[in-house]
Length: 154
Image 1: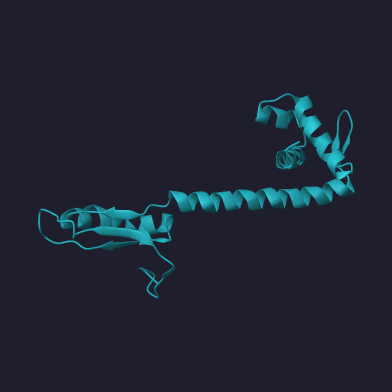
Image 2: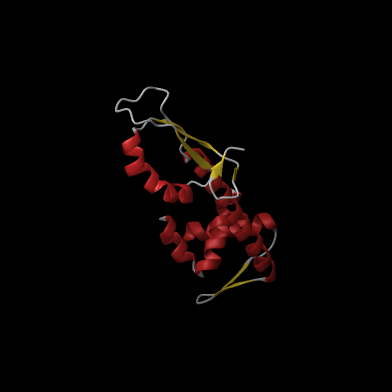
């Protein structure tokens, strides 16, 4: 038994109030979901759910385990989300012409900073029509914002 998967299934059963609904969500049969919860109960040595033909209710142990399990799953999903965002955050060097940055980049910076608060943009541009490798937009991670609300590399 994959305990984490069994805990996720148990939490979903409690939240949906139905083994069948969770089975439909997962694309498996209802007996597979029921077996996962039963295996979890056997592992814990405690009955988590009171089952009748028409009703499903938590036992005292089930209520306690549900609260802990829901918190565990929420924390895990939050951690995965934070790590995923960190890997997906843009970084690198972008080269743009002055007219382009003034017309297209600068107006979009507030939304960009709202979406990527840990990324800063530094523009080094000139009026030249051709751009050398020294005229760049450098996007790099930041630690904090300055007192004016603008990103600062600290």
